[in-house]
Image (cartoon, rainbow, N blue to C red; front, side):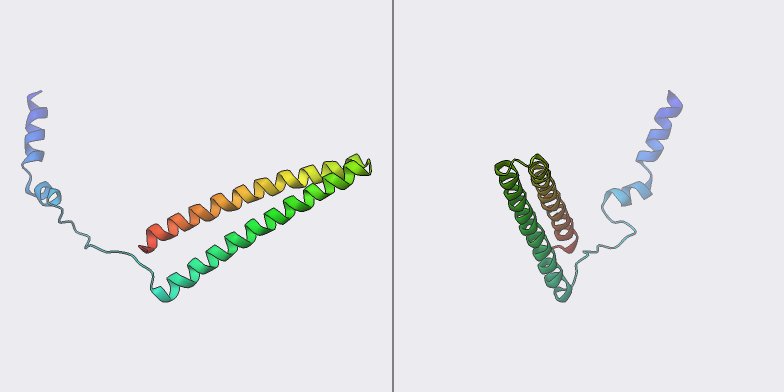
Length: 114
């Protein structure tokens, strides 16, 4: 036990550790940021891509519901089933687009400092 305490005392009184504890490290302070000439167009492209994808997912859902209505009224079960499948995949696609775009935008704003 005495060797353990001696080792802890040696580590605690080491001047190299005191310098690191003061916050002065070997790596200089650096704040990564994209220039505005790159930052603004990238945000615009991300926003338009997410908006366009969500709009297409809504159109896919509407066309799926139209297939369900036509298939049900004309007694074509296969057409109604394809419509229901289209609605389901539109919901999954919209959720994926929303989640992915929000994650990409969150990571992008964290790294760009904006």
